[in-house]
Amino acid sequence: MRRVAVIFIVVVWTLTSLATAMAATGVATRIKDVAKVQGDRPNQLVGYGLVLGLNGTGDSNKTLQTMQSLSSMLSAFGVTVSAAQMQAKNVAAVMVTASLPAFVKAGDTIDITVSSMGDAKNLQGGMLLQTPLKAANGQIYAVGQGPVVTGGFSAGSGGSSQSKNFPTVGMMPNGAIVERDVATQLVNNGIITLSLSQPDFVTANRMRAAIDHRFGGQSVAHDPGTVSVTVPNQYENNVVGFVAALGEITIETDNIAKIIINERTGTIVMGAHVTIDEVAVAQGGLSIRINNTQDVSQPSALSGGSTLTTSNKTVDVKEDKAHIMVLPATVNVGDVVNALNAIGATPRDIIAILQAMKAAGALHAELQII
Image 1 (cartoon, rainbow, N blue to C red):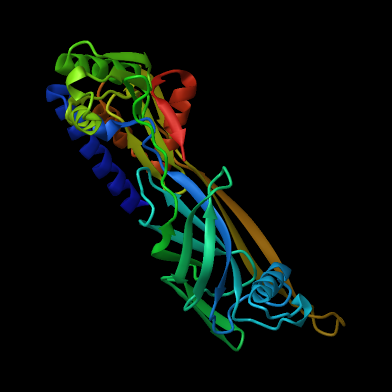
Image 2 (tube, rainbow, N blue to C red):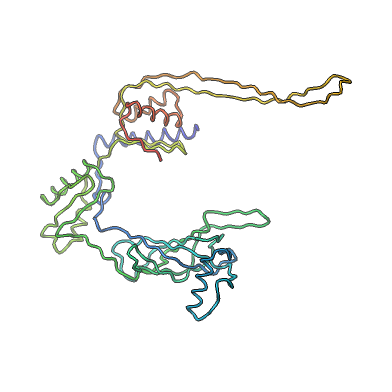
């Protein structure tokens, strides 16, 4: 816990220093780093296939879809074998997924992920058979085939086993060939629309002002997440150049006050705009200790009794002295950290204190628990 506390202090003090620098000078961020052009988006692909060549680590005969798929594949090559006759443990049924980037062309290659959907133990060393990959519209956009790379292993003998990573999921870099171009439209009626990755009214307005300053009254901020820009006449035949020029424009971003809490690891990250009102905080602990002792009950001589072992439990309750401190109103995240550290609060205590302060209305920030 002490190590987590040290990490917490270092992280928050680093953020405090950055926040102070940002407040003093402002940080210039390119538009291409905080927004993207609508239409420039990937598309998800999925397919069903078979992985062959496994060393006895494939699906068992209980996995009916594997046996049926293998029988159907063989029938396409003129081999007639029923699913009930299959005894192949070197085959695994898999789902193949991929992300098809925008602007790819037929003949380009993309990465794919192969995941076992049966009871296969390991896909290491397997070969994916030709697998069509479809989009949500049912059209085939890529075809995958080749060796599967798991990046892990699974081994066992005599009832004991060891494994590393997830050997039932494999990657295939450049494992699929794109078969169809993706239709992408960047300009609609002479207008390009930018979408902010983190919608914010202030950031959207600053983006509109920066674009107008650069190109002269060409943009409109419709909402905190969307800014539309009219393509100037000089860029009518050079849309790529115009998008590149837009992306290089620098602005100062703005975000709401937010505190991210990970209760599983005790990690807390505070933003630069976190403020508190004056509030009193008491921090203490209650510990309960139960002791179990064994006593022997020995009967007197010639009594005919037997020796017995009895269990005696004692409960010791200790309540630590609470530390009470008044936290003054502040607009600096560093002051919040100093005040909480001054009362000796651990990261777990700080999480509870922040939640209580938010419930009391003294903390002006959004709490996000992950």
